[in-house]
Structures are given as structure tokens and as C-alpha cells.
Image (cartoon, rainbow, N blue to C red):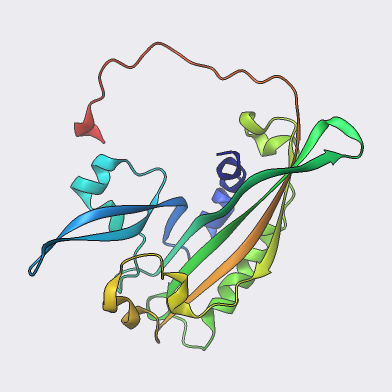
Length: 217
């Protein structure tokens, strides 16, 4: 998705934040069958980074990497809430289209491991993210896929109860313990505006991949 490529421009700065331990980038909701003592199997959903393969999910349990966990200092990842849509031309130029979309930046903090002992730690975490969100990228920010495009990000506060942030996932009752002190959560709505020229773009392909070695994934 183009919106994912736009959000990826922010990745280096987000990873560089001193309090960020697990950064998942853009995630997708993945549902897996889990063993259950009563029914034999139960299906649970988790946020999984788009960079994690199915093999890694099954073999390494990396589908759990972005779940709240007392062993982690923090978790941060994106959810796409609205894909890019065309809202018109830019300054009467038929060859430049304005695309807009929305994403949510979800954060979970373990204040004890972060060495933070004050209330509302999430507000301080969000404050450190704001300068990153208000960076403007021209010429695609160096991303060849977004060449000659300009991208802007705009923040709006997410007014939700902590539990609602994770409501689409099947964390069960255990998640309640990770929403109270010493833990904190937040969600930031981000609007993405892209102005992209309608110049020709070639999707470069190569020879077919004949064999994938899943043992290395």
C-alpha cells in the first residue's frame, strides 16, 4: 500500500526514540488457532508486523511480539484505519493528485522498566513523537516508489478508553492487568496527505522464484 510506504518514512525517527523497544511498523490483524483445554482449539487475533512471515509466526511465536507483556519496556505499531483516497487535483494541475488516508499509532508502556514513576506517562511519550509527525517529506523522502511526491502528517488525539485500543484483538482477560499501573497506553490518530504526480512508473520484475527456503525465514 502507498500509505504504508508513507508511514515507513517515519520509521527511523520512531525507532531512535530512547523509550521504544518493540516497533512493529504497519501491522495487520492475524487470526490463528490456539490450543484450548475445553474446546480443543480457539481462534485468537493479534497485531502482526507486515515484515513478519507466516513461517516466523508459526515457528517463532513472533505473532506475540506486539502483545502487552511485563517483560517488555514498550510496544509501538501502526494500524491503517483508512486507505488513501483521491480527493482532487493540486492547484488546478491535472497531473498532480491529492491523496488522503488515516492511520493510528498505538503505544503501550511499562513505566517500571522505563524508570518512570509519574502519572500520565503516555502524554510524555506522545509529546516526544509530535516533532516526528510534523516533518514534511518532499520528493518522496528518498523512497523511489514515492518519487516527486510530497507527504504531510497531521496528528489528532484519540479519545478512547485504554481497553478499547486493543478491543479488536483476542488478548482475553489477561490484558486487563497490563492496562493499569505501572502500565500506560495511548493511540494517536494521524492523517496523511500526499500530493503525487501522475508520471509513468515502472513496476520492475525479475525472473520467477523457483524455490523458497522456509528454513531460513
